[in-house]
Image 1: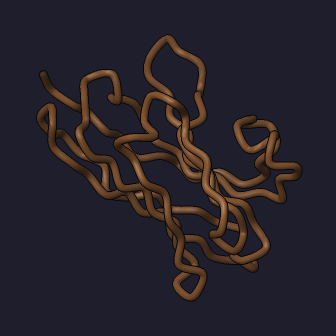
Image 2: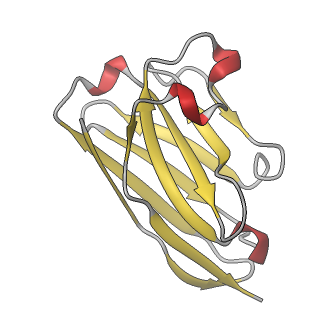
Length: 125
């Protein structure tokens, strides 16, 4: 399974970005999809996840009022809409795929099997 994240960039505080992650080589609808991020000197952290059918989504507290995760199983793509970006959101954003059960495990990077290379998001103040 290959994952390719895109949509990152350099933006100003308060603006928005839409990240996409296209997958190939597997059955997309078999996987829980997640977004993680990592900034220099920090551990990779969970941002959001969405269930196989898209009926359940989870987001970290610091983004849940600003970010939205969605998926299109017909296009084998997961999205992350990031609104109201702040400098603390600056990081490399990674998408991940895995068979993740139960829901309590969606925030754990180790439960995802496949990872994309990441896309850089930089938010200037």
